[in-house]
Amino acid sequence: MNDNLHQLRCFGCGERISGSDARPDFRCAQCGDLFEVEYPGWSQRKGPDRPNPGALKWLWRERRCSSESLDQSGVWRFRELLPILDSFGNAVTLREGNTPLYRLTRTAKALGIDQLFAKHQGMNPTGSFKDTGMTAALTVAKERGFEWVACASTGNTSAAMAAYAARAGLRSLVLIPEGKIAWGKLSQAMDYGAVTCQLKTDFDGCVKVLTEIVNRERIYLLNSVNPYRLEGQKTPAFEIAEAFDWTVPDHLIVPGGNLANSSALGKGFREMRELGLVSRMPRISVIQAEGANPLVRSFANSQGTALEPVEAHTRATAIRIGNPASWRKAARAIQDTGGWCLDVTETEIAIAKAELGAEGLGCEPASATTLAGLKKLRAEGKVGSGETVVLVLTGHTLKDADYTIDFHRGTLLNEQETAGHKTEIEALRRNAMAVEATPAAVLAAMKGSAG
Ligand code: F0G
Image 1 (spheres, rainbow, N blue to C red):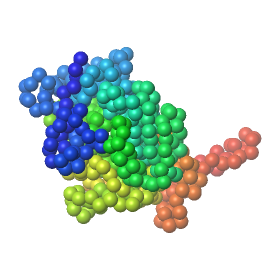
Image 2 (image 1 turned 180 degrees about the vertical axis):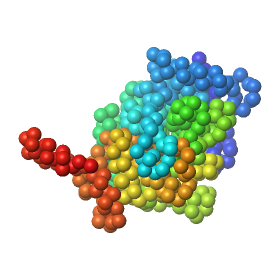
Image 3 (image 1 turned 60 degrees about the vertical axis):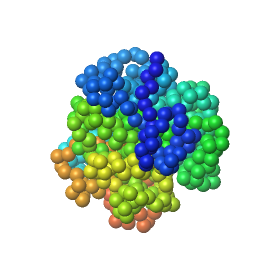
Image 4 (image 1 turned 135 degrees about the vertical axis):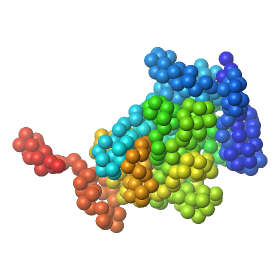
């Protein structure tokens, strides 16, 4: 079976190449920009390769009842919209995707919005949205006969890559910034058998070292410069549209680090619109941490046309990135949809994360930027009370338990950061208490913390 119907198009100069001609660093030989996967058959209006929207909607829903592993994957269930493999039978899957869309009733009420949802990508097999992209790109590595795969990571990509590589029987190499990733993520890379190197540099430094390595040795690069990652990562857009019965929400809010996820979701919605599956795109807004905000600066200084790298600092280590690879693609998703790019402080992230936790939906700090960003957009009058808003929560709360414990113990933020927010923070903090082992003492503790 040959299911492969794609080519790669340079995002910068428009050069088109075949997938097998991509350079090891996935940069365009002409202009150095990144590639995007495109499907030429889709532009031929009545061509045999152009998907039929009505039939697809029916088929994708039917597959939810199937016992085939490919159908049980929330990525490959939509395989007609990502025909990147030589054969779908080769797909390496952990049944990723099909993540829940939760309603956030209390937060919605507090913000004066009717319809607020969280698409929880942390409910994927390795606990982050990276699994959806990894099943796609790692399968391409397997089909092309690679023995080694590699990534530079702030933690989640490495956890996902190591797991999928182990499933496929491939070796994996992980480069992470020493001391700057959460333990949960590091432990996963170790457990899944990756060769894990902690480098004395930041994420951007790890990317530099890895680019040289893949240009020298036959190792398949699985960072999000790899355009196949984005094909998997666009599928939550399909899930969201399906959940809203093929209407789309008004506004999608996504955290921004290396800026592939916002790019991929934008591509997913754009393709659905082009194929007639939905009639419009949601606004896509990207939220960065104040100390790691190169795209926010780019919008402020040049309407998103030029990017100056920054030295990144934030406790939301997943998005501690100063030189994001996919910034042009993300800028386009924001501009095409009339979205915004803004940043939020460490305090705003910590409070938003605790608020999501209090709704029973933990997430990692990077994911909480979305709620912090929504609060700002709402305060600035950029989100109306009648709008339907979806926050994309990218990682599971257990990825970074230290952060959560520090918040509730009151040791996360410094004096300067808590100033002006003390009452709000105290109302959210739920530190564990040392209590005498008697019913009376436990009941007294319970009553003392009521409210
Ligand atoms: N949220 C989480 C939990 C992440 O792990 C990342 C990125 C992002 C948001 C940002 O997504 O980079 O596509 O804009 N983590 C990468 C990693 C960089 O190595 O795990 P992005």
